[in-house]
Length: 65
Image (cartoon, rainbow, N blue to C red):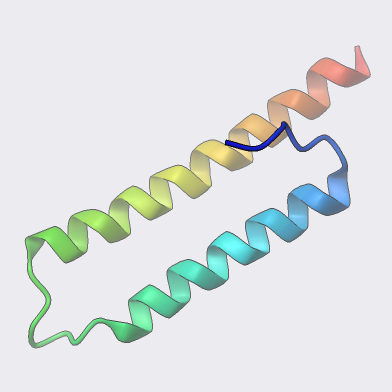
C-alpha cells in the first residue's frame, strides 16, 4: 500500500484513474453473461471509490484545521 495522498491534484488524478478502471471493467462485461459476482465486484469498486472520496474530503478538512 502506498503513502497517503495529500495533494489535491494528485487526489483528483487518483480518482480519475480509478473511475477509468471502473469504466473499463464495465465495458468489458457482457450483459448477457454477467453473473452475480460480476455485479458484486462492480458494486465493490463503486463503494471503494466512494470511500476514497470521503477519505480525501475528510483529510482536506482535518488539514485545514
